[in-house]
Amino acid sequence: MIQNKPSDKHKQHKKHKKHKKQSNSFRIGCIVILLIYLYLLTKLILFKGGAVDVGLVWNRLIEILQQPDLIHTRTVNLTPFQEIKRDWHSLSLHRPGTAIHLAGNIVAFIPFGILIAGMVRQSFFTGINVLFLSFLLSLGYEATQLLTGIGIFDVDDLMLNTLGGMIGYLVYATMLVLYRLIEGGKARVAARRYGKERHV
Image (cartoon, rainbow, N blue to C red; front, side, top):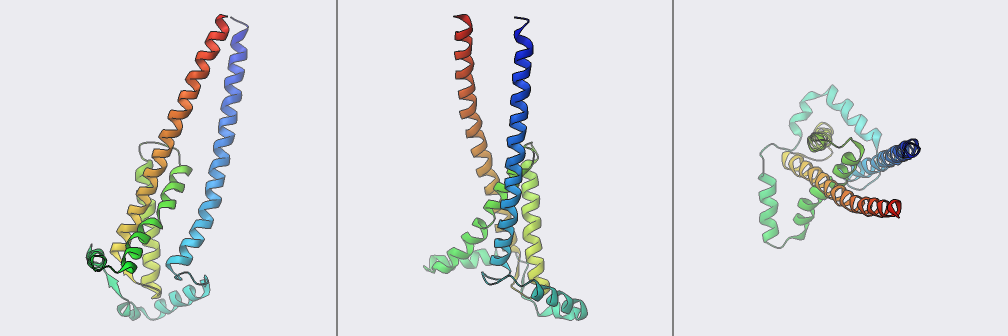
């Protein structure tokens, strides 16, 4: 029994190193995917699917700094649920474009919630982190649209985007629980099998 203890410790240490290496590789993969995702999201939100033109955004920002009064020419919605109610009414009139707008604002941020949840250490505050970062990212896009005039600052978009991020977090959390249940079941089966072999 005494001879087996160092062997067991060595196995546990080796297993821990392997798990840590896999975890780091997973996080690096998430970061790469996140960067690609943010590029595509920027292309979709700011440039409506067209070519990403950083020069245009920069020129508009310089313009608003030189002429602050231009901010009054921007279209802004600061009334919560105003556009959501309007889109919902249009949806009841069988206008599919509004469904795309409503669902799109949510779906576009679901991958963000999944990726952020996968990158941070799992804890009680993971959901709060995803909520805050989803809100912050959406606010960044809305503020850019307000300052540059490329689009509309809409508080409803801010709410729907943040909701999408939280749905993404819930999807990730559900997948993680299922994975741990499956792996836990496999570990228990392996432990029972190992115990039987030792008694033989």
